[in-house]
Amino acid sequence: MAFNHFHYVPCLKWKTGEYQAILKMPESMKKMITPLIEVPEYTFDHEERKKPKTLDHHIELFIKRVGAKWGGAPCFVDIKNIHNSTNMGNGKSLVAHIYEELFQNNCSPILVTGVERADAFQAEIINVLAKNSSADLCLRLPLEEFAKNGFEKRLQLLLERMKIGINKVHLIIDLGAPNFIPLDGFFKAIQESIYRYLNPKDWMTFSIVGTSMPNIIKQGVSILPRYEWKLYKTIINQCKKEGLRLPAFGDYAVTYPSVTPDLDWTKISSSAKMKYTIDDGWYLVKGKSLRDGPPTQFHDMCRDLVGSSYYSGQKYSFGDQFIQKCATDKSVKTRNHTLWVTAGTNHHLVKVALDIANLYASS
Image (cartoon, rainbow, N blue to C red; front, side, top):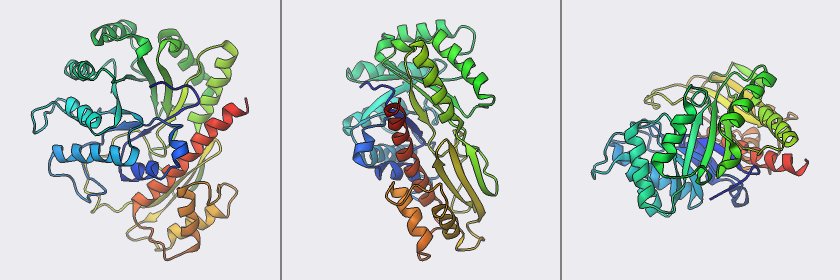
């Protein structure tokens, strides 16, 4: 499977709100994306409303949901959030079990690894590749990883161990949630590193993923720059001038990259939040506690957004339709946090896919 810079690579933690959001995307737009799906950490499951009793059950749910919510289209699958030296109940390694079960369930997972991952993990990836001749491999590189001394040698040794050429490997540069400011300086630093050490033209696909979504949202309404999108447009403009390969764009949808702690969310009182993607920015709202705050606060948030110049219209996406309904119908139940993740993520996925298409159509 190969794609070019017209594609979108959203990194999704595959919690309930996110996989429901991608399920509700128009089929035509799903063809424009290849998600980077992270196997969720073994913790509270929002759909089950509890933590699965065993790791085996947790993985079974994940595999089932990839098939049901995404289907047979290619997707990157990364298990970095789970202790991958664990064996399953059937004796198979976690790595082999996840990928082989996905293949058998007619999914098309692309195996994800990195230069710094454990030797035992790399050995399991090699075994899966050997047993599945049609399997693809992706190298996911955190920004700090390829900036280390000796990176080029370690990369060469890994590819030799995998017995695979660069032209058969997908490359994802993962910026995480860096300090983008000053944007010009950050751009020059990463462009020099990427195009000097990694030769992007040689890889099967080439994507850059990152986010400026804050980890903590301030009370009230905030309009913040979407620096990852601004950075991407800067990269594209410069690469066109220099005749360099253009990367595909990726982000973390409307989430922050860090892993969620192992908490019982039936006992946690979170605040009302709404994350809405706008041109070059974020429209973020944080209200009061869902448990103790006014019952109409989400309705009020939606009414304010719908009445603003930022709203895309109810026909734009499933998420926008839900926001419109919430703004006008106070009988809509709003206290479920997952609903707002679904609405915000669905709107975001549609917007970014369209933004990418429009970016290249106008250039």
